[in-house]
Length: 427
Ligand code: GLA
Image 1 (cartoon, rainbow, N blue to C red):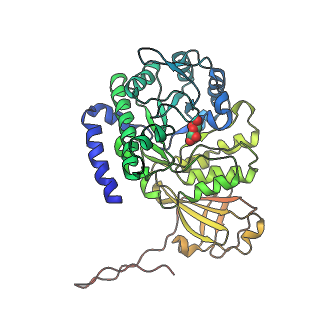
Image 2: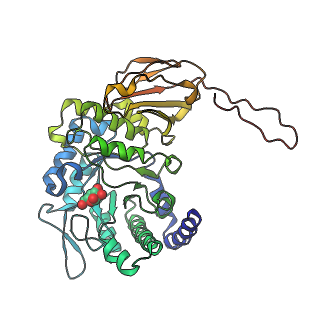
Image 3: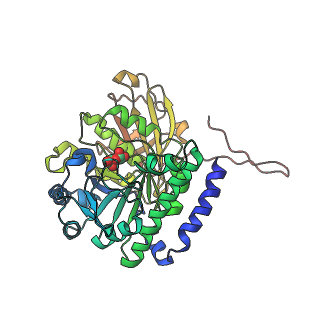
């Protein structure tokens, strides 16, 4: 399966990259060196979003300090599209009277702007998609000055995959990958003309392991799952599905567990904090999706916690892995630049009793003994000792950064001929 994907990937990417200039490919690889941060209209506004909301979001990113914290992209999601004219040019609907002027406005705030489309005839919201107009659309986004495209599979499934390859799953997946190769190429060609790189965000719900093939076609991020919802169960399910994907993330190419729901729905403060921390541990794109003009101070405090953002944006670009789980408590660790490390202890259970009795096991984290770190939600120094009891409210998190960990040094025996070196097994 893996071999097949890789072979396919190689042949597709050769076709994809052959005609793309070296300059544009270089420009493209320079974007998203850390996970993209910004705001997207979908999770709060859905189909109600208009030009005014986008301008207000840009203003708010600046006035709330979110821009200074790193939130740079203002992304318009679905429902901006009208119909194509006789030349195939796609027009905007009346909610977005002048896209170029809107892009200029967002840029004037020192921010970047993103747009949305899909490879089918229709987007998920039933608006015009890019099928058959990929280059024309990519050029239009580039002329408007867009910096980011989210490309959502949706109607390509019935329009092309099921129609052209009924009952042939493998052929359907090939068609899907080709559709992303096509837009990747179109974006790189458009970028070559303007010199403005466009972040390419794949949204196809994690089908056929995009982490294996998306980077080579120019994908900077790819959704790993279905849509997030502003509910703990959704946050937890999505986070759990990221286990095993750490090896695929790195500068320029990221696993995307979907946009943030921080501040949306009925998430408790603990759940908002855990959601945000977990995404930061996962080196996830941090695209806020809340109502910025009406953001509560406690939500702003979560989104602008610079220590937590720094975990997400760590230049090493290594995604967290689950070190171990003990009952309903999960412990995730993330290596950071300079041999530092972030540790998250999460009570995923429905009450405080899930952490009774939870005792931290430092050996499972490869530490020799007590570690001194910073609790990123209290801002205080914290001493992590072996077997220390940790009690957390339901769905809450302890997030600690250790700048100078004292690690257990693996002992390597002297190698005699014919022997393999052995590492000390964890105790
Ligand atoms: C899909 C995507 C969402 C959003 C909507 C818009 O469901 O996964 O993130 O873009 O389409 O219609």
